[in-house]
Length: 79
Image 1 (cartoon, rainbow, N blue to C red):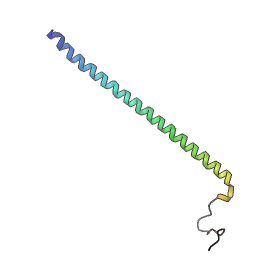
Image 2: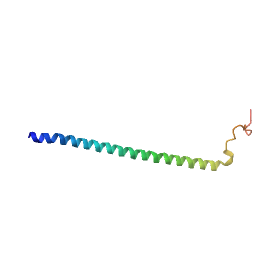
Image 3: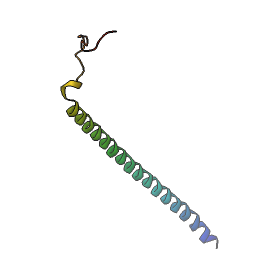
């Protein structure tokens, strides 16, 4: 019986180390997946923002352009 205990303890430790290594690998894989999802979401937000700006620019046309800096806006009335 003593012989089985001397084999069992290192075997249990080895299995525990393998399980921990597997958990570490799973955590790394999950982190990579989350990073990819975040990057995809950021790209989708950026693309949507760019499309919205382009649509707004097309809808407003040249009337909505900001005046050049250095020149006062003469279209507004002073009170």
